[in-house]
Image (cartoon, rainbow, N blue to C red; front, side, top):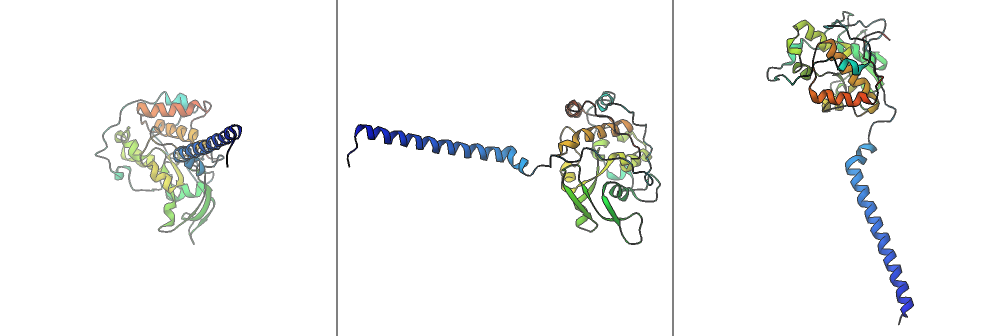
Length: 267
């Protein structure tokens, strides 16, 4: 079959259009894959947009404030940050968890250990083990670090899914002033409800002993409160921040200039 010149040009235009469409489709696939393997995969499984924005410190009627080195001043968290000393990290080779005393003491003298106090404070519908008014057996809550709904059930394996995090990690505190505290003050720091939150176990493991310069909660709604709480703890126990840590805190608080310090009080 013989094509006329006009028919040949028409078929050539169609061929070019087809190749252009194929090239555009290929480019869209490449861009899509690039997005997925950078930000997209995290957005797809990221925290809910309406995750918690704060966690209380004390529960009225059964929790008591733990005496700190000094009271947390009321006012903007950014202003309090400017009063905290800025230094480098001290050595960590002499750190041992036992420097903070036995884990989960009853420092507030309410008859229950600190871990169960925090579980009871943060879980909704907390249930207790049989014949106990302290030992939390189960409960649910909207977890603040990831924003997900979690269920806690006591057990050798299941308990690890929900952990109690030190907002200012004890290892971090050791390198930023806690070595100069008395043993009793370190016990208070480790058991102060101001410095403790029930959180997702894997998120807590991911955080480890990081400060705000190297780790922040995936739930962005919680970051202002989280940073303000760290500042409040560091001020209460006369700890310091590193330059990078202070810069990170200032960046977060720049987005919420009205954020106040976190003061231990019953709600």
